[in-house]
Length: 66
Image (tube, rainbow, N blue to C red):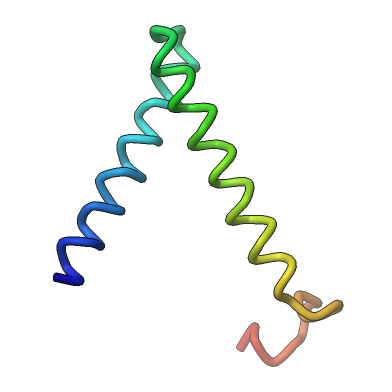
């Protein structure tokens, strides 16, 4: 069951990326809407990952770079 969920998420991600590229080349209105939603979701994921970090944890020479 978990495999089907992961495959579904992968299909949505790949489809969203295709829509972003297609919209950049002047696709139809619905493609631009999907591309906008994909970019907004990506931005939310990026911001949520940044919010969970401690200040200074991404400095050079930290233990996580090993």
